[in-house]
Length: 229
Image: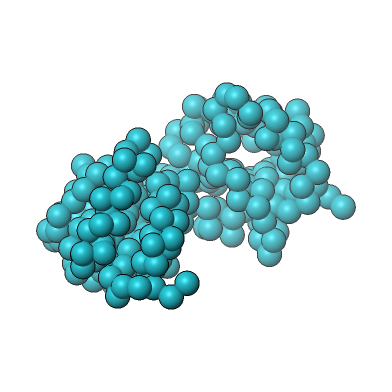
């Protein structure tokens, strides 16, 4: 569909840890925005203050996105340039954004996404596992559907990428062993781009033993080898 307006929504990736990872283009876009939609205005406020950017901020998160999407589209159609950011990384990747993008496109509003930080990319690349073909699964369900989802990936031959909370890393590894077998290769990266960045590689059994001795801390990207063919 041809966009019916020159006004648009711009998705702006923000650093996943190291503030130096923001691009010059991202900074310029935020400086020029009439409105910045932020997952958490307190978190984003710290980044914007660091960048010396003072623009109107509006909260946009998983709990209010359905209620606010129409009013945001109305602002764009009236001429405002709206930028969407999440707390870290690229909006809509395991963060709010998909709903707004979909509705903008339905209304013929142009949507642009800038290239920039996304946690799973460095974790995948430095895992040592094949990254020419992979499947990104995001966060596993916390309870309902978790086992079913993992079981459904038992015969997946591509490298698999997951996000996980430190509180469920051990549980995830135990479940992966149950469904994928103890010898499947895995790489776990935490605190990417931050001071205490760390990657643990080995078999699922070795990784589980490590994190049973050393409490997981920080947000994790888990990269699991696919089934051998």
